[in-house]
Length: 422
Ligand code: PMP
Image 1 (cartoon, rainbow, N blue to C red):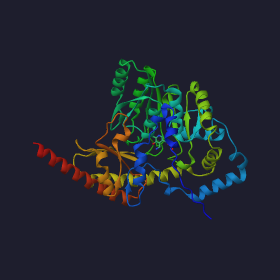
Image 2: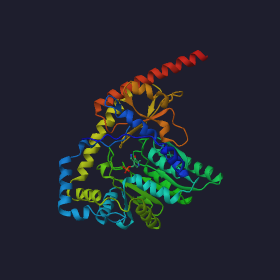
Image 3: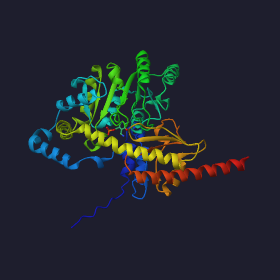
Image 4: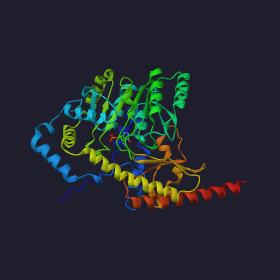
């Protein structure tokens, strides 16, 4: 007989909330989380989420990898492991980073539970309340949320279609220093940026590294999309050029599968011990099972070909979105041209508020993420992130068409309002 569980409200919840630490007030759901519930309804074309498209993954093969692991090495796979991560996987990670010009020793690699955990640990180690973290404008919503939970003051640095603008970085540093504030690090995503879709060219990488070295500011290079380029490899990683001043974050979430929750940090030696201690207090050790499954896959399977498959799948979707934007979006709308990764960043004419427009888009059965989610300072109200990674090309076309119609009608009603005011 099934047991029915009723939840009785005892007033206990309020009591509990009164006991929260002050920092708990900074733990707020992201705009994206709230959106996902709506966007995941089957009738909605979701151009909102950034979920990798696992339809290209050969599940049979993964099933073999996992079965072999448990059969042949179950005692180790199901046991606790090293806080720094499995030595074999750390070696394989170094081989992968070599594809982007990085020469690294496995001793300097720390395996984390996704690169999101590395962001959390680094924030915990570096950020005191009101320290400044410099980020791109716009930047990854998950990083902004973490920095804010550690009470950082986030300062955005302007980007253009080639990513962060070095002179703007210099200006942001001077302005921040003039206020007497302490800059802890620069966080950026140089390849196929989330949410901007842009890639930082090699010369800008060097320039930004020079500025940061000169100013004694650490660089946190977050690179989950680097191997997902559509026109050949992206420029060498920033870490390849500077092993002292760059903390590099990598992840298997987009090149294999996010369900394993395996990422890593490659850190300068002075940081390594602190990061391992912070990781141990957080999770004791990353999952041996997930690490060894990935390690077995990398050792026995054609993972480079699999990444090429992913790139093919995403390129078809990028093309579908680009064609549809050109066809269905009104004059005055502009967008970036991603050469890899998952995202377009679209900016609409002055006066449109993409957050306020969202209910109309949902009514037209399409979802996106409003631009303000990617700023810590309220900017981005006439921008939006559109992701093409997950839906089929047909659904992408339908979604962009529907969204184009919503935007056109929004522009028309704005025009009417403006005329009436004259
Ligand atoms: N950094 C960026 C730029 C991301 O887009 C994401 C995930 N969307 C992450 C970090 C976190 O990825 P994971 O924890 O799955 O490695």
